Each structure stands twice: as structure tokens, then as C-alpha cells.
Image (cartoon, rainbow, N blue to C red):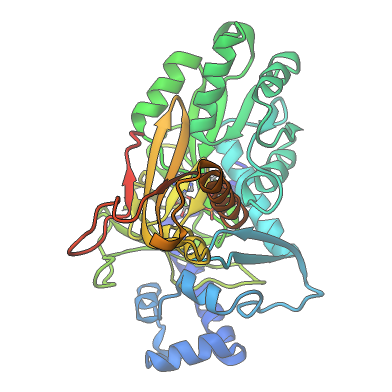
Length: 432
Ligand code: DLL
């Protein structure tokens, strides 16, 4: 089933011509009217006239998350306040978040992308779809909400938390499809078991659209065999718009709709383009973005592109499962966390020394993060209440800046390991 057969199944050659035309007009526009892109291109010694084919995109400069941070909040916007109709916010690399703005057209192609994606996994107007991603600043909830409404599904905007209630709703309302993080679905499975509910026997839930964090084929097998729910991968980032693209029924990679995004894979160390099939860092150019254009944005996710035609008939390239990142970003319970944010927060607290460790584990289906941090000599007290008060304060600060609960363990001066070379601050013990 297709939502937009013409665009989804366009002959490859036509798709490449379309991508070239879109890229060319984007580059012309930004070079002429936008100081950031103009200066960037000048610095790289590239002019719009140098872009004579799609592969010439590789001559264009990269964009980084740092650019968004340096220009926070709206310095990268190319639309006026009256044209911007929505903001979403995601974590940045320090205390500063990344702000993403949308014009009406931006919301439109985002919704269109999700309508195509949901149709491609067989979700439509006969479905009742529970959206168990966070609603609010995170893009997951509202993004999937509008996509599911567009295909005519009955949408249940459950958001996150209140797991028992969510399970009851799935049962009572005959929910057939769900969107959430893979770890949350596994967690739901565990809670349901305790409630005496078997998803296969007691509910109509048969499809799940899972993403926002890394997951594996073994997790897919676990969900399918334990819960009887067919699981599909969904990918996107807030800088692209939010969740956007899924696998089709073939489940051999996420279709990256070519009329919306142009994808490249580069060697993260040299920045050189890699061949189709080779693993490297994903770089995206968003062809339709209005409020906040993205040209050659380095997402930092590691994957490969498959250009082979898919048996489903869609001609867009597919990316393989995200196998890691080329930076140190962690995703904890669906929330992006940079160790540098944690360090930044700890360093604002005068009683703490500069030595810390972040330990991430998975208990049941849920991630747990422990931050161990040393106290300065003169702040150390043998009064338990003093230390408890300080620990609670550090936890509050981390919650305030990271928007995620971390457990803090205060350590005596000299207790944490020292490193001669690169400090190893993160121990991630999760098996996904
Ligand atoms: O996580 C958007 C989203 C919402 C995607 C709901 C899918 C479903 P950000 O918060 O900006 O946006 O985080 C983007 O999450 O660069 C990847 O590292 C990771 N990620 C997203 N989807 C997947 C996936 C949303 N299917 C970052 N597999 C990305 C692995 C994923 N990692």
C-alpha cells in the first residue's frame, strides 16, 4: 500500500533529477539571502555555480550541531516569526538545547512523510493507534500524532508514563498499533504480565512503530515472539523535523523519502563520501525545509545506504539499522544525553571536584544512569545529613538541566580512577 505512489515509486533517475533541482535552488537561495550559508560556502571556496550535479553536493560545507548551538535560539532560522508556527526543543551538547522551528509547510511535509511511513507498514483508517512517545518539546508525540491522524487512524495520545493505565487502554479500546521506544514496549510487556494480561491473548495490539533509540534484531525477535506484536523501525531526528521514515513490510532498511531528504554517507574522520553499502556517518540535506534549512548536516549516526530497489516498489534509498554514533551522545530512556552536559552541570556546583563517572545499565527494560562524582576535600563532611543534602541537590540540578533522573553517588576525594590518557567517563553496560 502506498500513500503517494507517484513520489514513492518514482523512477530512480527522475528522483535524482528532482533531488538535484531542489538542491540547486536551495543552495542558490541560501547563498544569496542567508549570511550563515553565504559565509560558510565562501570559506570553503564553493559557489552555487559549482553545483552541476547531485554528486557535487559533496563540495558543499558540512553543518554541525555546534552551529545550532552557536546560533541559539533562532539565529539559523530563515523564516520570520510570523511564518514560524511551532517550536520543538531537543538536548544540546551543554546546557543549551537545540531549538527547531517549523513553518506551516514544514509541518505539512513532516506529516506527509509520516503518512507515507505508516501506510507502508499497513497502518490506516481501520487502526486505533496509541502514541506513547512524549508529547511536548520532544518531537515523537506530536509528530506521530499528526501522521496517524492523517492516515485516518483513531489516535490515542497516551504520552509516556502511567504504564498500567496505558495497558488498560490498549485492552479496553482495542488498540491495534502503538508508537513508542522499543525499551518502553518491552517494559509494558513486563508490567502487563504482572497484571495478568497477555498481549497476544487479551489485546488487539499487533503492530509497533519503534525508534528514538538504538535497538537490535534480537530485541525485535523478543518483542515479536513474547508479545505477538510485529515491530517496525522508525527513524528521524529533531533537526530533520522529528520521527519521519520507517521500514516497509520488507523490513530491510528505513526508506529515506528522496523527495524530502538527500542522504550521504561519509567517513567520520576524513569527511570523504563513501560508496553505497559502506558504513559511515549519515549526512542529510533536507530538500523542503523552510524555517531552518539543513544542508549536509552531520547527524553523527553510523549506518550505510542501500540503493538497490526494494521489493516493495519504493525507489528511495534505505538506511541500515543505526549501529552507533560518531560522537559520545547517549540515549537514556529515549532522551538524548551528552556526557558534556553532565560535566557542565556538575562543574557549576562548587563542592564537587572534576572527577566523575557515568554508569549506564539496563534493568528489566529500563535504562538506569548513575553519576559518581568526587567531592572536594574542603566540602567533605562526615555528617550523613550534609552529604545526603548535597547528593539530593546534585540530583535536582541534573534533573533540571538534563530532564532525566540520574542517581548520584558522592565519592570521597581520590576515590574515582584517574586516567593517564583519555579519561573514560562513560561505562555503558547495556546490551540492546
Ligand atoms: O528521537 C526523533 C524520533 C522520535 C525518532 C520518535 C523516532 C521515533 P532526537 O531526540 O533529535 O529525535 O534524537 C535523534 O535518536 O540521531 C539517533 O541517534 C536516535 N534514533 C532515532 N531513531 C532511531 C532508531 C528523535 N530508529 C537521535 N534507531 C538520532 C536508532 C535512533 N537510533
